[in-house]
Image 1: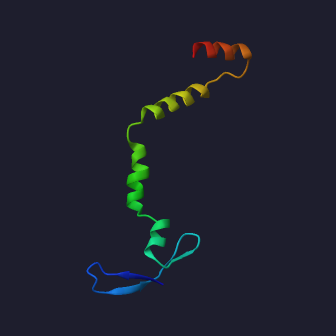
Image 2: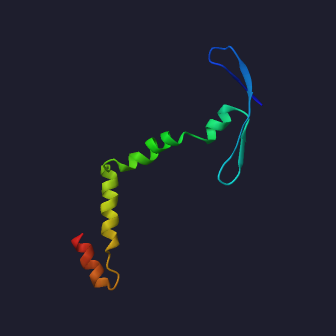
Image 3: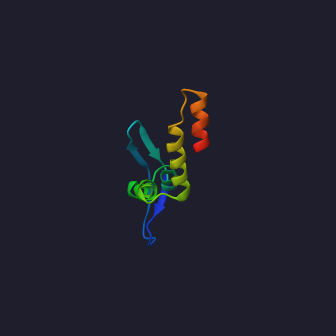
Length: 88
């Protein structure tokens, strides 16, 4: 088991973190092992998910325009394709 110490150095303890996740049990013998694989859900939401709701970057806007444009590529005849390509 891993050892931990109080911030004021008044006490030490052995640590063993064991819990059941969605699919399996997890066990860690130190806090470092635990924090290497897990992170706080609120921080995850703030850093990863909420940032997607901000205004789009220029690169993302250009990608969206490109995807919208290629979605309407005519494939029924070569003539229609070349006409579409000339307009773009």
